[in-house]
Length: 113
Length: 111
Image (cartoon, rainbow over all chains, first blue to last red; front, side):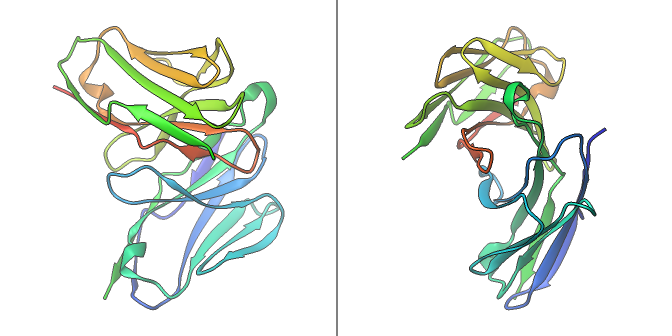
């Protein structure tokens, strides 16, 4: 079966660092995605990891451990505009199976002043 | 550059009425195309995907159907809407394994 777990809600303070975890069990793995989704809007792409390790992009970093089925998204120097839902998704087999992304339920992050 | 369009942006339809949502992609060829639905406060549920013209795979059996009449056009349809069909419908495309981009979405309310 396929299962992707992430915390439902998190709260953090402006200027702080927050880590959002994601664990997965999937049949076939072609990378892990993180998306940001503000209320009422479409998800926007943040990061893609396919090899173990940390990928850094400005204030956002994403980590992957394939052996542990584990990823995290790290947000530094939090800003109020970072309040959003953060979605973890795993890409399954490609080719005729379409490279489907299977999503977790999302983590609602609230940044407080 | 690539762009993805969806219309309409919002739709209010009565129970039992038909539905047609359209998605088009510009600036790329032979993309994989996807339809997702997001119920209020929930994650994204994959409904259909297509790897080419006329090739549709269904993920969840329900009263919806999808078609891909052209390379960059993906249509989601229903003959009779149910209340449970309300939600945020998102179309997405990808060509490379390390990408997937979403359209702006259609918010459907079935009354």
